[in-house]
Structures are given as structure tokens and as C-alpha cells.
Length: 567
Image 1 (tube, rainbow, N blue to C red):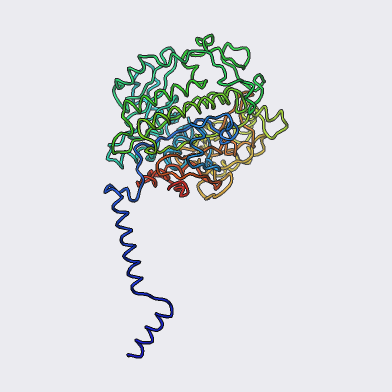
Image 2: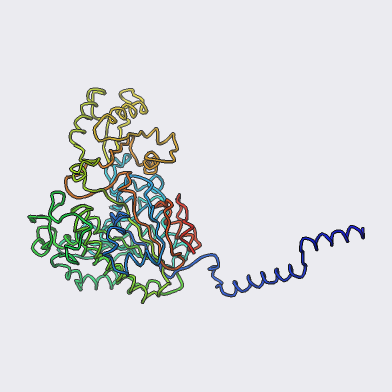
């Protein structure tokens, strides 16, 4: 036994084992843990970063390349501050279609896709109620702040919780959630089910910020005062370019055939005489289609920060802002217009104003920001066609007439298709049953018919969506937008660059890269500086914020936290 002990000691000496040194290392490690514990609070922040305020910014219809195209025109305090001092996800995409505002805002805030959260469009056909419904519409509630029906809204169609709901739950409902946007759906959906308030802009003759009785019975005094002061009236002025228009070399010529007009306007060119066009274009509603709509959104959001004391106590608050006017401008003039360029340069100034105020009110380094979009957009399809690029305008009437003739010839009735909505055919099951037909057979027959039409790239059936699990490509994107209870029976995708578009302005909605590639920037407390070209997806945003704060992600989350973002 003694010989064995001597042998063991000899082996330990050979390999360099030093009991004294090991004990010292253990002691050092123990002290290190204790030191860390001393620096942490007792509130659980040792496993999470808790900002005083989270600011979620959605820029409606923002393409990723608006960051790079206009980079040299931006100042240092807006987009550049987010990119240079935050984290830039350069290859960020929507992983579903249709890429539209309602679905986009819902996906950003729920951490999942329409297949789960249920917002399959801005409007869609409800096959059970046999009516078209609006993503935020709710007749069970009344308007607050207006006598019109513009406030009859609620988030009841979202089938999961949102990241804003999770903040409320995580703070025992003590953290505030305020959502602000020009568009009602841009405020209602991000605010989630438990928001303290969601406000949107009602144009017309009044130009007021309004809400729904879902949130409150009357406007807070500060909102009433804001409306009474008519601060929006300062934007009733001509829209000229912020800088010399000759410096706008990142966009096309100012006068061209691919841009729309305000009512009463002769040419789509600067300056835009908003005062002269006021009455013919809905009075204050005209501001929605100008960069002034973003500015008045920033004005109201900053008033909310001040009057609601956001980010001033120990419970994390959440301010959700959607800048909607970028979408209106893009739809009217197109992504290559001087108007879009000017709108983003002015938005850059509004972002600087927002961040500078948050630095003072909340504290530099005490708030966390993410900025993304609800979808991107295509170049004007008519422009693409004229440049001999793939794309163009699908003749919708010709397509509809051909389908009608097919239905009559094949089934003896057009009633077999109950509704067409969001590039989907909804079948009438009772008619199919009365004709003693099989639903799967009818779906497949219609798919085989549609795939022959000019402009249609792919066609899918509901049976395919039910029976398969797609993991890549267009089928994966379409399936993520397919909700079993709400979507149609035959789904079709237009060719790249093609669709039922007009000849002027840009639009969106497809599964193609120009509609899916959107910015994703993180900045502030708990965020690393850096960038990645690895693919990220819109549903990753909510779980990333949840991981940052050490709380549960929304109930239907299918995205993953972006590990590289978090310190």
C-alpha cells in the first residue's frame, strides 16, 4: 500500500499537480463570483439587462437599401447613430407572405408568422362569417376623440401575445405600453392586448390623435391639450426638398411617368403646394402622404414620453412607434423617387430628435431601441418593364375573365369560388358537395388551371399546406403565411416583379426579395456594437428583446433570439 502511495505522488509531481495552487485557483474563482454578485442587484439583473424603456420603431415600407443608398445624405444622429453605435442585421428578411402592413406589425411584435398569429393581411375574407374583415377593426368598441368610426378598433384578431404584452406581464402590469402611428393598425397591433394606450391620427378637417374605447373611455388631458393646441397646423405648408434637389443623385428624375399625383396636381414634381391642394386631398389627411406625417408622429411620441413619464421608474416601459408616411409616399411616387429620398432624409432628422430627447429624459445608455420595417417594396413594375427587366403589370380583368369561363365550362357555375382575396381562392364547400365533387380534386384542378396564366409563377393548394412541411424557398414563405382557419383553398404567387399593380407608385405583398429584405437595427442598453450578414428573420426580433430582458417571449414565438446582438 505504501509503495502505491509513493507511486501516486510521483505521478502527480510528474504531471505538475500542485494542491496549493489548485486551492488558490478555487479561492480566486470563488472570490470572483462573490465580486460579481456584489455588483449585481437583487432584482434578477444578473441574468438580464433591464432597460428603463424599450423603443420599437417600425418604418412602413422601408427597404434595407435605403440605409445604404442615402447614407451619405444622412446626419450623424439618426440612422447612422443606430448603425455605428448599435448592431446591424444586414441580411434580415420576412419569412412569410403576404408582406403587408397588418401582417408585418403583428409578426414583428408576436415573434411569429401569420400561420400562428392569424393576421394574414390588412383585410381578408372571413370564410366562417362570410364577410371581409379588417385586421384591427372591431365594431364592439367606440371611437374616442372623434365622432367618426375611425376609432372602432382593437387587437382582438391577434391570436397570440406580443412582446409588449410580455413586458406588461413581466412587470406585473406596472410597466407602461404606449403605441403611436398615423395608421390605426400601426398602433393597435404593436400595442398588443394589454397596452395602456394606442393612438393614431385622424386627418380630415380636425387633424386629431384618437383612440378606441378598448383602451379608455376618454382621452387623457395631455392628448386633449395636444389636439387643442393644433400643433399639427404648422405642417400646413409647401413641401420642398430638405436639401438642394440637385444633390439627390440617389433617385431618378423628378418628373416621370411612373409617379402618381395629388388630386388637382398637374405634375408629380417639387415643390408640392400642400396649401393649394389642401381641400381636394382631405385637408389634414394630405399630410399622411408627406414627410410631415412622420414629423407629427415624432411630435406626439415625444409628448407621450414626457406626459406619461416613460422610462423614469424601475419598471421597464415600452414605446412602440410606427412611421407610416414612408408607405404613403412610396405608394404614390415609387421607391426611386425624389420624394422617397427627401422623406428619408427628413425622417433621419426626426429620429435624431427622438434619440436626443430620450438621452435627456431617460438617460443615455438607459434605453434600448430596435428599428425595422413592416415590409419593403418593389420598383414601379411599369418602370421595370420599360427597362427590359423581369416584371410588369398583370392584367387582372383578363385573368378574372378567363377563370370565370373555366368555372362555367368545367363545373357549370361560378359559385364554386366564393371569394378571391389576397391572391387566394376561397371555395364554397356546400356547392362542391352539392355537385358531388371532392374538395381536394377541385383544389388541384384549379391550381392546374391557374398555373397556365401569364404572370403566375406558382400555385399551391390548402391540401399541400396541410400535408407538407416546407423548409426553404417560396413554398416555405407561402406556408408561413398560411393560417389553417383563415386562409383560402388555392394560393397563387405572381412572377418576380409582376402583380396586379398600377402603372405608378410602388407596392408590396409578394414573397420576393424586394418585398422581404428589410432593415433590422438594435441599439442601446444591452446591445453589442457590430453587424452580421447571417440571415435573420422578422420573428427573431421579439425573442431577442425577451432574452435581453430575461423574460418569456410571446406565446406563439417561432423566431429565435439573435445571440450576436446581445452583450
